[in-house]
Amino acid sequence: MGWWQNLRQRCRTCSRVTLGAGVLAVTLGISFVMLTAGAYGLAWTNTEQFCIGCHEMRENVYAEFKGTIHDKNRSGVRAICSSCHVPHEPLALVIRKMQASFEVWGHLTGKIDTKEKFEKNRYEMAVKEWTRMKKNGSQECRNCHHFDAMDEEKQTEKARGRHAKAKAEGTACIDCHFGIAHKEPDGPGPRELKIAK
Amino acid sequence: MKNAKYAIGVALGMLAGAAQAQSVDVPAAEAILKKSGCMKCHSVSAEKEGPAFKKTAAKYKGQADAAAKLQTHLMSGPTIKVDGKEERHDIIKSKDDREIKNAVAYILSR
Image (cartoon, rainbow over all chains, first blue to last red):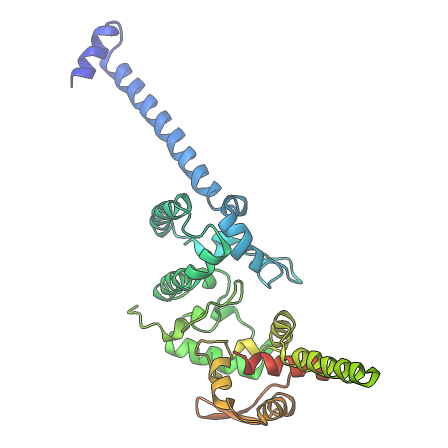
């Protein structure tokens, strides 16, 4: 506790309690600033502007997303990249952000910096995301779309039947609803991926 | 000489027509298939409730009347079986013969 002795020598007139309270206040202040900055930083990386800051996203998946039902619709409720691709739960969110920081390496090395390279890697990237969405039961879809809140009367007979089956079998939304916001990659779909939940 | 030029012109015209008939307007086909709700049950290459377009194309491969058969399938709403239950196949949402033929050509060329 060398730093504490040092502090006491510098402020001989201060009592132990005053000094302790001062140290606590400074610690809390720094923690507050760091936590706030961290929260703002995380929120900033969840914005659409951040996601389309690189041309790999802007010119490929974002361009495909424009005009789809999740971008423009009669009610004006809109999903952005992070609504579907970033978990909303705090711990899962931080883990996903840490994983994503490794993806920056791909950006720096130019892994998908041309249309051709993007297409070459599209299936691999889609499978990674499908796998994540199958493992968490398509949680990001279900953050907005709740089985229990669906008005079956407003669904077609076919949709009603398919949803009842999915609910009974615990099927992930992504098993059927893939390729709705982005171009469908060439190859087997989510349903054909054998993934342990 | 004049007749020969005319014949060449006609032949080139026919070739151009045939090439146009074979070429597929992919964005237009994808748009009408999406508008008709086809992609809810079908995919180009992946498994869904309905067969993938690639599977359909393989099934009809080499059949002279493939396009006609598929067009009838899309326009008549036949009874199909999904998970062992009978249901009516949706009808393509278009009255435009060229648009429907383009969608058929798109599916068969996957």
